[in-house]
Every structure is written in structure tokens, then in C-alpha cells.
Length: 276
Image 1 (cartoon, rainbow, N blue to C red):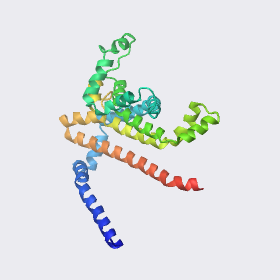
Image 2 (cartoon, rainbow, N blue to C red; image 1 turned 135 degrees about the vertical axis):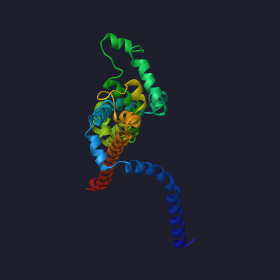
Image 3 (cartoon, one colour; image 1 turned 90 degrees about the vertical axis):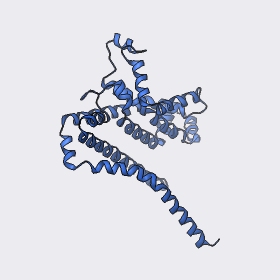
Image 4 (cartoon, one colour; image 1 turned 180 degrees about the vertical axis):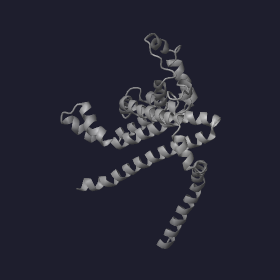
């Protein structure tokens, strides 16, 4: 086959794949365009000046960022354990971590309520100690963490497992402890995976609805996040629901673009820095 014919066939194959991918791309883009077309700048500014919208935005940002911090602290050891396939109970733990991602969020919320509610498995002990978890901001964070943390754990575990074993062995031979190997070798070489996992966790926590409304309720200024305010606005004022939806999409999209751009620039700069 001649080179010209090979190039022509390759180009035709590429164009065919682009055409085949177009329906799904339009399936995602068209609803978003339809949503944005219903909201004017005046509507956006008017909604942002309303106290309920400001409260929902504040609760969403506060709880979702707290969720990321909690996940980073408590999820990193789990991810490190999962990065070692030879570890005890690895397969069971691996399956358990993925379970919240396939559970219906309403089931997750009900499970949290049965565990930490006032008459739940552990809730009675918290009640005796004077702590009430359900229908509080803590419940929002717990619901978000239950649903979103597996995304970070999975990404971090892949990042940890990608570190060259020889580098870890060399650091251990030089006298580094396990903590020092993790701190000075594994974590710095996995930071892109950790950042990506944090962003995915934050985005998922920001959009969490089902588990939150069952375990934390829908109290304005206290547990009402943006998705819950959208749900309430859909029943009372569609314009508010549309505006908050646009804000939520815009905020999520902007953060994802910034992070992806940062990671892309870092990836491009790495070969040059290594050569230098």
C-alpha cells in the first residue's frame, strides 16, 4: 500500500471516529446550553443578592472543602494500603472502598442515619455524650465524605503504586524509615495524582444530594447546600433553581479547567527540567 493511500485511510478513520463521538458530545453539551440560555445576567446578579442563595453557596463551599481536608487526612493511609496488592485483606478492602460509588446516594444516607442517628447503632452513644450529628453541618460533611472520598482514595492509590519500587528500596537502603520514604519519595512523586483525586472529591462533594438530604436534612443556612437549594427552588421558584444550577456548573467547570491546565503545564515542563 502506498504512503499516500495509507495517510488517506488513516485520515478517514480519524474522521469516522470523530463523527461517531459527536452524538454523545452533543448529548452532554445541548442540555448545558439549554440551561445557560434560560438564565440572564440580571437573573444571576439578582439571585446572588438573595440571602438564601448566599447561604447555600457558603454552606456548599465550606462543607465540600472540609470534606476534601478530611478525606486527605484519613483517606491517604487507606490509599497507601491499597497501593500494596500483597497487603492483607487487600481484595476485600478494595471492594469495600468502591461500594459507596455504586450505592444509590439515598441508600448511603439511610445507612448513615441508621448508624449515627439518635437511635442508630452508634448514635445513642453520641447522644449520651451530648453530640447530635444528624441534621447538622457535620452530617453534611459525613455524607459528602462517604460518597466522594473513594474517588480520592482510588486516584491516590494509583499514584502511589506508580512510584518506582527501586527508588523506594534505595531510600530504605540509605536508612530512611517508612514514614521518611513516604514523605520524601512517594508523596512528592505522586502529588499530581493526589491533586487530581482531591479535585474529583471536591467536585463530587459539591454536587452531592441524595445522602445529604436524608442524613442532614434541608435547613437553609445550616445544611442546605446548593443542590438542595436547587431542589427546593425547582418546587418554589424555577428561576432560582436555574440560576443556582448555572453557578454550580460554572464553578465546577472553572476549577476543573484551572487544575487541568496547571497539570498540563507541569507535565510539559517536567522533561525540560529533567534535561536541565
